[in-house]
Picture (tube, one colour):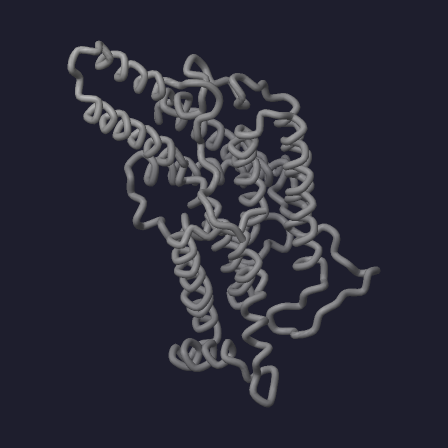
Length: 365
């Protein structure tokens, strides 16, 4: 856990246009003929605060919303998929809601790599950051998905080393991140202390300012729809069926295309049109994705609560809420389970993530 702002597209390196604007303002008033020094000082402070505010506002909120959506999907399909088979993993060919979770995780990790490494111009520091983050993800993956944790219903812990699951979701994400991040670190140019081609202003803020929304969306949507259409054609022509079990080429294209289109839609709604309120809970979850993943999606908090039972391990607060607040009220095990997952888990974690965001508390790897 740590307190502090999340990664943003912020400036780095030498003077950018904003700093030059401050210097020009000082020159215009510095003729030595009766200027009001105090007024000039206040003006410069105001300009500096405005510049800082602009830098902080450059965070692409759509990335957080997409990350939050992925966590929400994971909770939904893991905990309600047993009641609704149509949203659970496809047994062979085809693609269900659950089959989007893993590709969405990989997609947003890949998108975020450039932002994360842009602020680490030194190659040695970049490699160290990549290795440490990879090891952290592997550790949590083995602990939570390797078989050691049986949360939330089974209160026992431990795994036979011969049966440990080495390739859970988080472990696979860690390996993909390691390879792709190293490629990014060793192949992207560093100019003015920042990775990537940043143009004349030579800082990330100036670069983002010059990318109009139109140009950014043109690239995202073109790539997203191209992959989406290619995946559909390959599947329905029976050339390469969409198959999650085999990670077929059509499956990769289709899910990556859907991810690109959804991210573009979020970007239009949230970052371009400013409709942030309806998506705030997704942003909050996305900003604290690791915390919600560990405590929520992997059932660690529920397991802790289940550890305090009355007479029988089946008589716990969680089980009582599911049975009496949802299942018995709606007279349906399936509907009650779905409503519990929506309100007792997804909404609950949205509120918790929102509170932590207000306190500026984030769990980052």
